[in-house]
Image (tube, rainbow, N blue to C red; front, top):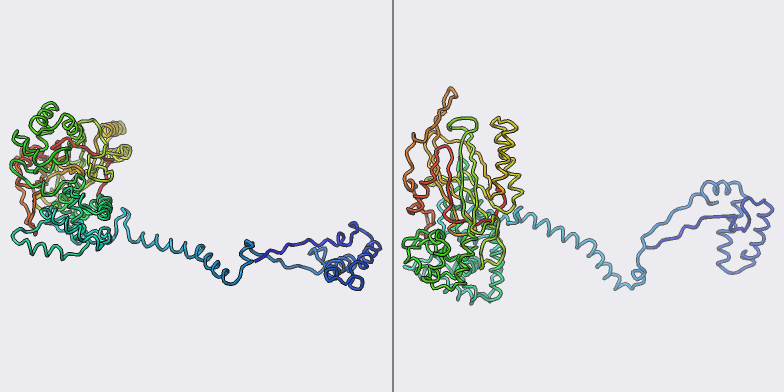
Length: 597
């Protein structure tokens, strides 16, 4: 393409006369230029062209009436002139031969058209492939399909490794030898029936190669057998661990998503997901959490502490320190003496343990359930559940990252608050809580308290005082969780509240809630339910463990056979009112407000 320059037609300048010259002066100038440029006088073609296009037309424009009219209207004696426009291109694009020109044209089309289209197609395909939480839709479908109400904690792993993100990790032929060696190292963690070990092993290897690889790599992480991995397998494991937190969160959502006609989720798989998350973050084998001897939680919680091994746990258990909470309840000097004299730790190793214990979170919960503006709860009422979750640490921090030396990435602590009926396996209320973003937590608490007080008809002064008290509690390390549910049919309900940490083992809180729902009166009056009208909560409650389609390798620390847990539940009983329960351990948590599910 090219650009033609537009020249303004000036007849007086062409003829070399002043503007407004007389006819005689114009004629004289024309004769003089004719001698120089007329074809009869000058054979040069350029001179002939200049004479015809400029001199003659300039003379005509100043002497012929029609030409002069055109000149005055359009600036040219021939009338309106066309306008040529073009695009300026570099000269090297114009001075090329046919072969290089075609290649260059293809390159220009590729960069300007094909490349943007390709990027757009990739972006749109990825957008349709992933959810807003950057988890593949295929993973959500798989988790929803394979999640079962009776899923045992030891079998949650089988569902977790079916994530589409994990299935896309390539299985190389060069991995086979390393995986065979890894299988021997972690075989005891694979839930294989020892009575029929050969068939069980054959069945394991007949699975999809990606499932075999995924489980072996996760088990290698839990058992600290990663040294035996090849560099390529170590990269694959790091990729799996980087994806694990968000996949576990989605798996948790699939467990607590409303499934029953009443809109309840499933408790047993939800607890299993949290326990798997704890084990992955802390790199503790699932088998280490099986109840042993006098400990209902196994020796797994101790493995979170530096320098601790199974043999160290056996040594201190002789001093009646069988649970992590027993160790945490000791005074620092008593703990140091135990570790140095009984466990054989050095002074530096004992200090390492003390630092981690001070990082561990301890959770306390205040829960109230009531019908706004009414006394007692009648069937069909909208019940407001209000829970204040308070975090304490030995080092005084509120938001902090967990001590997880084997997890390759930074991971925030999150807590899941579940209000559930363990007998029916139903989760009534579920909410995620963390303690990182204080500003967001203040905004959420302010809004919730303000709406609650306004609905109760409180005055502006009372509302402001309640909001100020809520803000002070948030700044002191508490988070407010509020939710509503419809009261079920008339009857007594033995509920449990669970506050589960996804990053620490043994730093959870559990309590029992007794809820009595009255029959709706026809007159609309309501009767107050007194605490002494209800039977006292027996130690442990009467939870019935649902039969599982799987054989468990280990029992959850929330197993109803645990007498210690039963006693703790009894201490937190609620009768349509409020309860305060303190967590089993000093609990460390990273959190920022609460997110309702």
